[in-house]
Image (cartoon, rainbow, N blue to C red):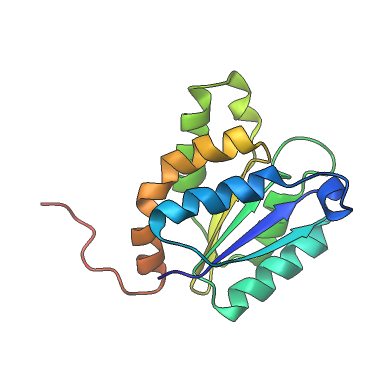
Length: 162
């Protein structure tokens, strides 16, 4: 069983002015991997607030943290920068796969600045803020997540297929 954190980045959501649908979609999609219990929080689009929560959860030893929101081109979209502030290594394949998947639905997928990386033994992946886009992106990466988390924890066997 994996331990997971879901962090929604939203000014309006953090003030209680918007219901967080994207975080709910993430939790529903994770259920297909058998994940039932997740940490959950909403923070405003503030670089320090985001990086503080990511650092805290990673240092607690969560296996996976998925963020939603703040990955576009708007001036307050700083989730990628906050993530890069605290990761030890980047893992670009996740976001490459998500953008490729999203391009099947909209040409606006190229506006995503999402990043993914590893802090200690925690995999952190930025997802878009739209519930529809979250679902589409998770479809692209869910099959690889269990093996990725095992690898990050040093528990994976051979990656090569016969």
